[in-house]
Image (cartoon, rainbow, N blue to C red):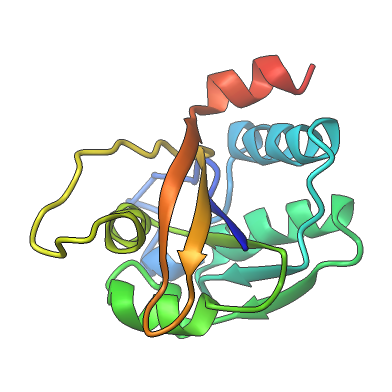
Length: 165
């Protein structure tokens, strides 16, 4: 199984107007970032079977943009992908027999999921930066007893934009 990890696109950060962080929408730049990722999937002929999204607005908007291009993909909103989620619990939810899944969420949880799946020593972590609109690919090596795999690639939004042109 291939797991694609996508951090939501750039979101409105005007905290003076925003009372509830869970309702922050994508900016125009954030929408473009995610559209570029959608084009990248098309360019690389990647077919997503299932999209798992955080329930926060900016992640749901990002997931829906991807789903427009991945018409066969089923979308599931799961609370375990909130920013304060626990990597092991999120991994239990996303472990699947699908050939390719997309996980859309937030830092620090997404980086923690990458570390959780790719590290045999759960106390040791890599220092990975996943920018808004950034995308990682993990190739799984095991689903049971817990999700395990290796990081195949990590793209910044700028790289995704250049590849998807």
